[in-house]
Length: 127
Image (cartoon, rainbow, N blue to C red; front, top):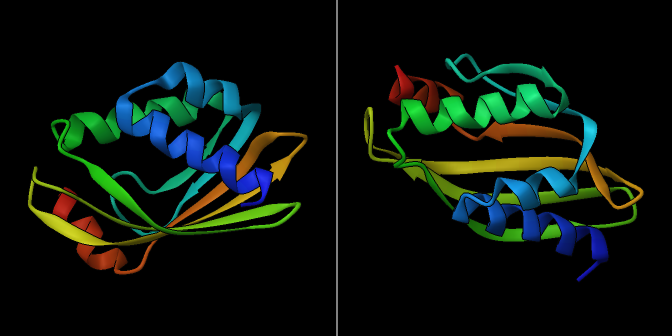
């Protein structure tokens, strides 16, 4: 796999274990995160503090039940696309697909677009 794909895979694995130190090491200090849709987690976030705040809110809202499994990773010198199956048990059960499009520069994730394939269902499950 392309080194950028390995970098992002490492980040997903660390996130799943709650290893935010590793995730933080892989993120550029000024990372930009774009969460598509209309859920309470949607919006644009800039910098590690805002992005980690979003991750904390995800954990709080889903009461720690959020989970995801990587379906595929496609990578080149500038971008990584990760397709996942994800879901949660709380506040309402949900299972669906998400696509993450990453921009990678100098061995760091600098931008991410997080796109649920069924944005309305994802938003409803978090309401």
